[in-house]
Image (cartoon, rainbow, N blue to C red; front, side, top):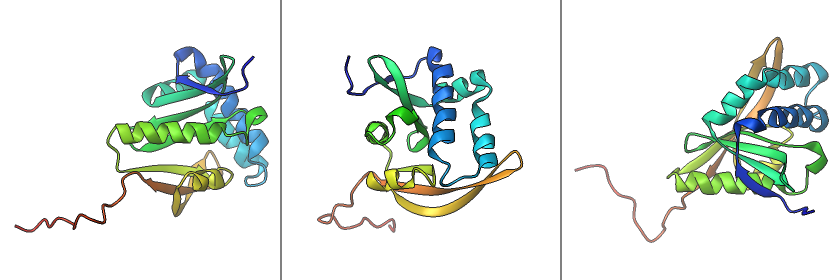
Length: 171
């Protein structure tokens, strides 16, 4: 039985398990940063498993597995936005999130993105910083009657070439 995570594309049959990972991650990992009612409202966004699965299917979603069992997932919306990134609490803080961020970063580069952004929970902020993301602004999001704070973070994907002078748009 392998304990090394592998990545594979999201399948429609993953919807219920990904929704369960989403809810468990919010409930178990975010209590230092968000209150009970905030976490309840956030986790409830996965109660409609079909709608949750459709959201994952609209993006390029990767599923992290161990021995074929899903333990986390991350989705790239368009070419340049990490829309969701969640890890089963049993496997948290073991590099699964970093593996997903790295893979999504590579996919964004492959899609020609110049930068990668994500709206990151207070709980996940340090993990994104460790992967080269920089905070841009604070946000407040309303879910039902609850307000949750998060941070828009950005990671440049192309380095400026210091040997090449900037091109002028003037003709």
